[in-house]
Length: 560
Picture 1: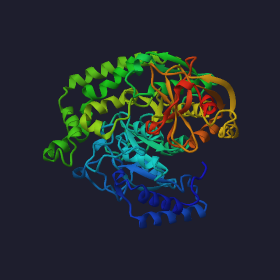
Picture 2 (picture 1 turned 120 degrees about the vertical axis):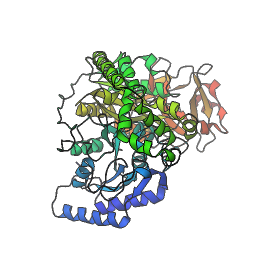
Picture 3 (picture 1 turned 90 degrees about the horizontal axis):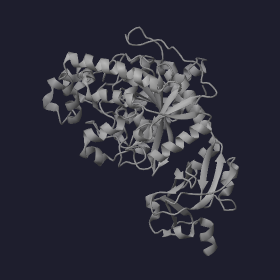
Picture 4 (picture 1 turned 180 degrees about the vertical axis):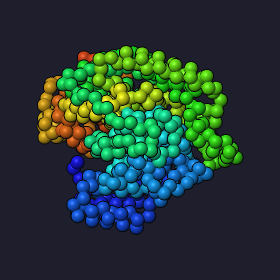
């Protein structure tokens, strides 16, 4: 694996500088003293200089605070539960043996119960890019620490989606391996039979490398198992996507962004087919609405029951209510749910027959902190539609970024049968490498001042095109002059532009150079296809002039 940092000392200094720079104390429950980090970095650098093979040397890690790190308290998000482990969790020990340095313990939804990142007495973790919105959970601090560049890697856990939802909402990668591949020794259980140690990173190759280094039975976790890797991905493969009705209720623009992502998958050589995933969605509801919640009580219910006076203070009220309710189901109800799950597993396998993976949005919406505070249970329940079933049905999954919608990160997810972990990574890599189509309406048009950016990025003009009659077009109050395309639906106008093909790397370079108040989103063309395109954020329209009636930027320039 390519070294990401020249020295461990440089990595530690960078992490410490970023912690001070971003000023996000809610990310952390505890941090290691700077002197300890510097001393460990010196040891790692000395070992590398002596010829030791340390593939993660020069990388820093955040660890979710339900995973043991020797010398730091494990709280699982509750000070009343805290203990100090004398040894690292197996996953942590394996990363440290490869040269990675643990910076600290990251905040989480208490007892890993939640997908929002707000259920912690240590503070709600705010989104990396919009502090008014949630980070996603329960691995909230881990995801934000990676997104903000504080650390290279972070460990989370995933029972219902906690290792994938924060990835989607913060624009990073989240890898949830097959259950048992990474031992959970030294992990405070949420649901012991369903918990998985996960990895966040800004790069899929790095995340997968970390998973591979943590994989393998350790002789202490009775649920750990040996990998049984599937065959390599065929050149022509089929991806399943949900029926259109199963995508209802997504945040504004997310359905369109998902359709655009499926088009990219097609351009990468995949056949995309719609499949009824109702069996998977029914299984997802069993995780909280059925008797399986009893396992959460088995994990930490006795602690909450013994400290009821702390509910609303050190013990989060919503979390306590969910876990204490786990004492109610009778044994026969649990066995009834096992029977239901077995039937749903068969139906789900039939629905995905002939497909290498299921492609979905990672989650359904990105609420504000205020929206979650107003409806903590309802807001959270919307988050796990496409994630809750994976562990119950023994499936592998990973989440990757798929663009920005209205200034917020949008992510997609690949899910497949147990032990398809490497196949899912190959699919994601192939999609990431696929050429992208980009619709331009302003300064990137042929002959305009920024067109050279597309040419330098390896772009190829496909031809003139126009949007569906659902858009408004504005001359923005910027210098230099720029147009702003905004989707308004019925009553809109068709706007003329151009479609360009760009290689994946070139597309990424163009996207990275897009200045505010513009963003890249999904644009519906007149022929019904969707491509990425330049869109204006709502803030951009302040002082802008509506030029929709002119139908395009060149017409506006000619008139000016």
